[in-house]
Image 1: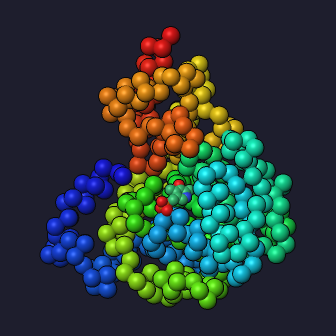
Image 2: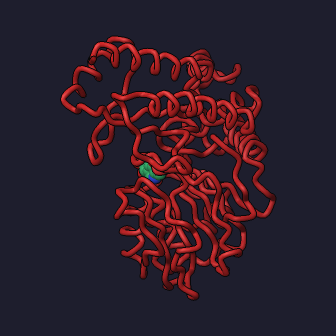
Image 3: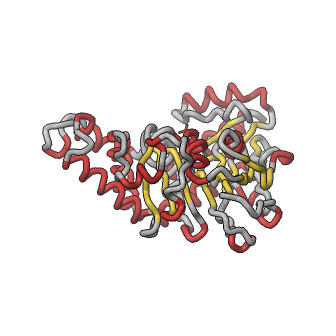
Length: 350
Ligand SMILES: *Cc1c(COP(=O)(O)O)cnc(C)c1O
C-alpha cells in the first residue's frame, strides 16, 4: 500500500469528509458512498484506458472465485482452453473443469514454469468459448509482456486474463481482451474487492445455475450493487487510484516498475550466490523469485533481511527459495535497499 493512502485513510477513518460517518458506517446506497464508488470507477476507467464497451464490475470472492465465476458466465456449457504457465493458471483450469470441459492449450510444466509457451504452438479448439491465461504468475515469476493476439492465431474466442498480480503495473491492450479479472490485494488495495472488466457482448450468457450475485449481467445492471459491495475496500482502492493518477498514471508506473525490476534482475544475473531461473523474455516485473545456490544459507539470509526491515522474502512453499514482490507501491528505494542487503550478505558468504 502507498503510505500516503494509509495516512489519508487514517485521517478520514472516523469522519469521512465532514459526513459525520466512517466509510464503514455508510449505506452503500447513500449519496456519500455512491460518490466514492463513482469516482473510483471513473478513475480506474481513465487509468486503465478501459473502452466504453467494457463494464467494470466490483465483485467479491477474489481471483479464486473468478476461476468458477468466469466459466459460469462465459462457457455456455461448451469447452474452454487454458494456457498453463504456473500455479495460478493450473488452478484456474482445474476449477473450470467443474463447470465444463477445460482443455489445456499449452503448458510450460515440463520446463518447471520458467518459460512461456509460444502462442503459435497453442492448441485452441475451434469450438472454444474462451482462452484463459494468467498475465503474471505470482508464484513462478513469469509474465506476459505482450498479450497474445488470438485473432492473429485464427481464433475468434475471447481472451480471459487473470491480471490479479500485475493490474495497474502496465497498460492493457483492450483490443486483445474479452475479460480481465483480479483480486485487489496485490496492486490496488486491500483484500475483499475483486475487479472484473468485461466486454459487454460477453455479458448475459450465464448458466442457469450461476448464483445471482455472480451473474455478470445482474452485477452490471445494478452498478455492482446487486448485493452489498465491499465498500471499505472500494474506498481504499479509490484512494490508490487517485495516488496512481497523481504519480503519472499507468505509463509512469510502468517505467518505475521496469527500473525496479531491472535493478534486481541485473544484480541477480551478476551474482554468483543468487540465481533466477526464469527465461529473460518473460521475467515478471512484479514477483521476482530467486534462489541461493547454497540453500543451507536460506535461514541466515531471511534472518538478516528481517533485521534490515526487508520483509516477506520467503518464496512460496510450492517452489521454495525466495521471492521479492515489488508491486506498484514498492518504491525504487525499497529495491535498492534489498540489493544492498543481498550484496552485503553475499560478501559474508565467501
Ligand atoms: C493472488 C492471486 C489469485 C488469488 O486471489 P484470491 O484473492 O486469494 O482468490 C489468483 N490469481 C493470481 C494470479 C494471484 O496472484
